[in-house]
Length: 95
Image 1 (cartoon, rainbow, N blue to C red):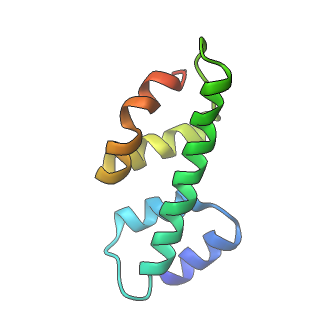
Image 2 (image 1 turned 180 degrees about the vertical axis):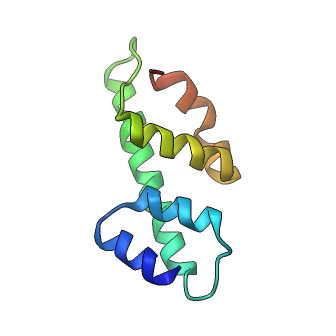
């Protein structure tokens, strides 16, 4: 798992890293990489949701593939779901 996480990190695919972390048991070797994936994913969600402040009366459209990854992450990570779940549903336009 660690090798795959390192490859994804180099490719800056942090959402995919976090999905991998959520699907497999975290080990001492992968703990730091999973923490980084969570931080980078949070930053990405924050960046998207901050656009809402500039567009108060509209919903935000995001890449459908990225949206699907974030939806899965929010379903499987209680911390992120509690932080972003309701905002994500309200602000992100469904296809």
